[in-house]
Length: 250
Ligand SMILES: *Cc1c(COP(=O)(O)O)cnc(C)c1O
Image (cartoon, rainbow, N blue to C red; front, top):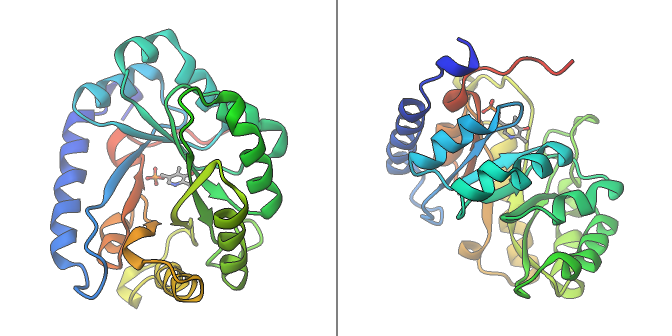
């Protein structure tokens, strides 16, 4: 299927439907937070995003700073998607912080992976923030232990979380995010990355005296977002099920 053939409205409707079904199957001991769909639009052209926006979608995710900046500042998006809410979900390098923070409509940075990054963003944010609100952030946790995946180790999660809460007045900590290993076969049982993220939330909340239902979990993509919701996801990041498959980056 080429980009222009994707049935965006149909895909969106199907994903939202599947999310509702998954909520009904969710473990009842978990906080019953209504999950939010973040539509991952990386590599996709702005007319496709606008189509999703016009079908009612508000939260969008990008994982390259330059691409996010170009899209968020494009005249089309500024004119037609006034209430868009951008999530940055990629690896954020220090030299790209301003590219991300200067984006109109930036809603959340989901990938805080070090004290240094938190400190930097906390320092820079007031320069870009016109209405003096705090920037929403999540702490990214490397649940799979793979070197290629970013995020703090689960054992470091409480430390980084505490740093953000105590020392970053311009940031508002909303929860935890993981990417996890790709292609996990759910027939083998619950995805260990999702279990690990939920467990991190429990541990960090009990260590720091935080309320479990105040902390979100961002986990699950096209292949496993329903499973993630069953295990407690409050944000799922779905791209290809809505926009069609991506060309691999060259
Ligand atoms: C690309 C991406 C997604 C979405 O992947 P799909 O398989 O297309 O749904 C989710 N999260 C992150 C961090 C991504 O980079």
